[in-house]
Image (tube, rainbow over the protein chains, first blue to last red):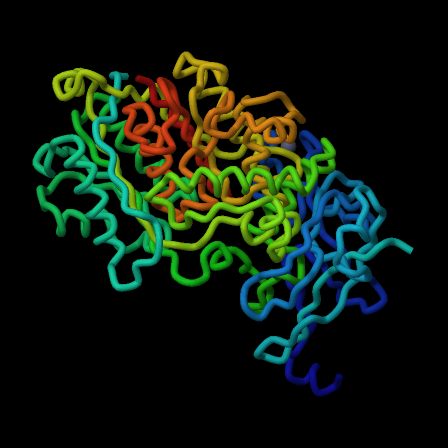
Length: 144
Length: 380
Ligand SMILES: [Zn+2]
């Protein structure tokens, strides 16, 4: 740990909207932005509202870590180096935002997945980049 | 806007041409279309060339270096899978606007080995791709999910999706331009390995190279060339409007629905007037969705449409008589022009064993994710 710090190494998010706090007691969360004019909520930041075109700065929102499975596919063949099979899903969050994600914690078989099933987000380190930084990803699993 | 007619179509058999440059494939198709129109490059006033993977390689100009450098304006177009049909639209607009009388549209592509798995992904922290870790942005998963959404909404089954592939592979048997011409049973399709559920291998378009071309001119000139001119009744292009999930889960439906509404209005025809449709079946699941998006049946009725074999040649509304992308192949930049050529041949009565008898009105639809949707309606 001390060595990583001296070399300026850190934990980086795999996508910019995964918010990782400097405070280790705070859980990482998905960051969203909400249009003050029409209420449309987006994953990550937007320069202006895609729905109502308002250019008023958006409100930062912390998105829920619990949602519902909207749809999925079981990917059996992908680009080289990507392990298969896995569940590629779309999860709806209560803020009106959808998230593209993997569903872990179940065998990748359609019979194990139900439309609307409750799922929860968790994070894990999935890679170390060439500078030695840990790359953190978010995933979803059936809610306990 | 002036009335525009299509007077020439050309296409090479889709497949693998590793020994050739993509501009050579494109030039071959261009020559075929010009011959069909009884023209040479001397008659062409504008060239629109669609190519996606080599969009910075000035393919349009390289075509002219093969078949005639007349110095005319050339537009190189890239618009995902709608690249070729967008080039066609540029040629159409050039003539319709009154700026040019005759324009040539060429679509071409060399896919390499990766095909539809080649793009996508990208954009991760520290150069790490999120693909396969944070869901999938690649086409197989996207169109798998889109099909699963239809299952969720309407109870559509794996078998119904598979039936679409059975139909298109059967149609391909009569299309010499098709990359694959292999008839398959429902069992063959369903027992093949899964690529991204619910699509199996034979429910996904193959990877290949190809080129297609079309000559467009004013209706006035067309009438001097032929007694049976084919009118381009509409050339419609849309992008995706805001929809709630679209930023995460590409919405392949809304922009097609918007395009079909605009296209039917512009052409003054309805879905009920169509004699045939060539639509964008990059995956079997996609064709199912587009039955409804194009108004060929009501919402939620697409499964029944294929169950009743209404989209077979000989059925109420034949879809993808060419064998579709599933058999014919999907060289991205060529696809959109090839779909229009297919409709053209049917209206001219030149579609051989797959001919839809007495076809007078046909629709060609293409969607590129990201997204772009084109609809062209040709009319005899
Ligand atoms: Zn807004």
